[in-house]
Image 1: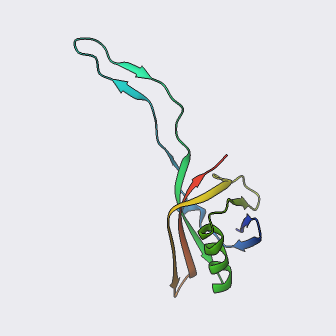
Image 2 (image 1 turned 60 degrees about the vertical axis):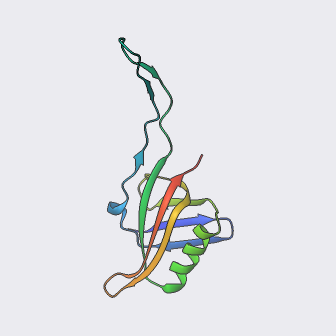
Length: 116
């Protein structure tokens, strides 16, 4: 399986373990507790999807290029061969970690949030 990461000024195609991508959305409903009465709810849409993405790259050059794309604060578009991605347009919102695995090659871990 091949996943392509594209951003302004760069593209990387890397092997990606999509099973490590689990998205979450924070519910943003506000509950107002009323004394001696039923609570009142302020309904709001759920927040954006977030995920911890793990990307396996076969070369150090691809791994550092992709880490730089996320590190520059750019929107990175994720597409997958033959399948619709769980998250398409993303930004890094917390950790960007790059390390070498003797078995997997270069591993890039990025905390991401979807953007519209």
